[in-house]
Length: 382
Image (cartoon, rainbow, N blue to C red; front, side, top):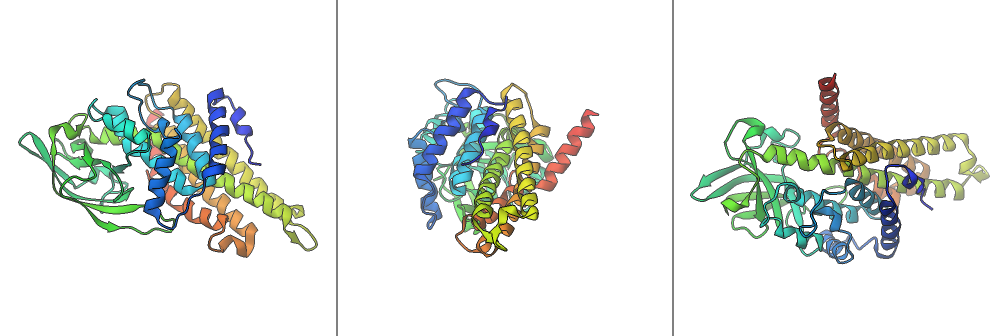
């Protein structure tokens, strides 16, 4: 039985506890899905999650507008990740892909949100480029003003849901100013003329990823999200909300690894006794439990702080993502060690966790970048 004592922490309200219980029950009945065809699996997951109401927290409810509840996003990601990494991916990308529309979108742009919340449209966040991943200010893709619209030219890469998304939020240089100040955000339909899939990208934990090409993609002026030059601020605001949730997903992976390890050492015998009686094994389990709880405290502190009305949680979110993802890697590595040969057997849950966790230390700001963010925040406050 997974440890749920953390739900009694003062970060949460009764509605969060009820969510965790109901979603866990749903996951046990519906997950995992067949991952053989990753595109089909993601479409199925988005449809299932939307049909049963689990995607509602990912975007603004235009009929009842209010701030996104980051604790709900985190609990959902943690729970889904514990059951199925691809389900977590499907949920997370619906939120990240529409984050700019929830926070800054015009009413006509926000019409997409009822579809993404219902699982009837798939969204994507297109920020990274071949020569600008962590360095967003180095974005090269251009959006040239042409009459009453814009023409987008360039490439985006490592785009989650690339190739299956119905809408993309795309960041491009409009030339209003150098560096980060010259970026703008655009809403691009997945069937826009000139938008192509240059390459599908295969990774160690299969997800739908692609390099996108924009060959003279013509958009109306109404595709601009916010104002010209607001792109960097929009991107950072979206990441400020969703970066903590990456830590939550890592936390879900780590909890599953810990649960599997506790079961393993209780059942497996070594030298005539259960592995759990060995002090070295007990030391590993203690370290894993400590890292899980410490990560949870940082993740839910960041989420709670944002939900309490903080304008920005840059420091808190960076700490949560850095610590939770790095420590989840360590927890899962210990789980592999405790499982011995089974831990590296293809198809074993611990082996799949080992592959799933690695990307979380890179996307939405690599661990090294989070250290720079934290240092600047700490020194700037001194």
